[in-house]
Amino acid sequence: MTWTDEELVARSISGDADSFNELVLRWERPIYALAYRTIGREEDARDVCQETFLRAFRALPGFRGQAKFSSWLYRIALNLCRDWVRRERRAPVVQAPEGVDLIELAAAAEPSESIEDLVARKDLTKAVERAMALLPEEQRTAIILKEYHGLTFQEIADLVGCPLSTVKTRLYQGLTVIRRELAKKVRL
Image (tube, helix red, strand yellow):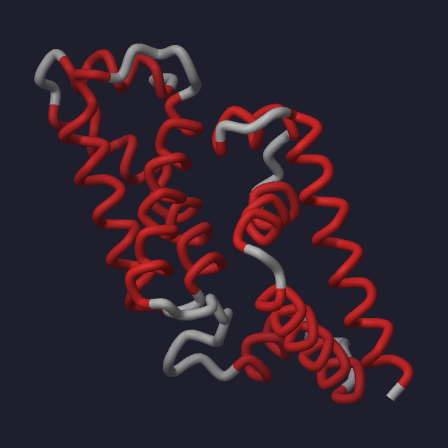
């Protein structure tokens, strides 16, 4: 039987450790992906992911279900990412994990793709990463949550604690900067 997140939370609060483990298994990859896209370093993203679940476990008895469990978990992760960026005073830069050859990975995923297309896609990915690094944290977060994690505008607004119109504005302005930066690359 597959339990909902809310049912697993209730069971966890009642003392069922396996239920919380199921939540970790269910949400570990999305939380790691969020941390990696925000911070850009594999090891630090793993640390943030681990700390997210540790804090969630400790705070679980206080979870009242006013928001979805996933939104609550995303908020914890985003706050930890922001703290990390502030503490490290680094601009987040997405980079390939150590030991991963992007060309081999892409070739395995797209065997019919020509080497020219593969190089062009790799260049485009790097250009998008550079453009994302230019964005203010709020715009970058809105784009990551919308485009990479598929959250709705309302979910993002609830998650980051701002009006819906602000989320839309941040996304629009961020995407405008990315388009402009990509257009510069095309002109070169």
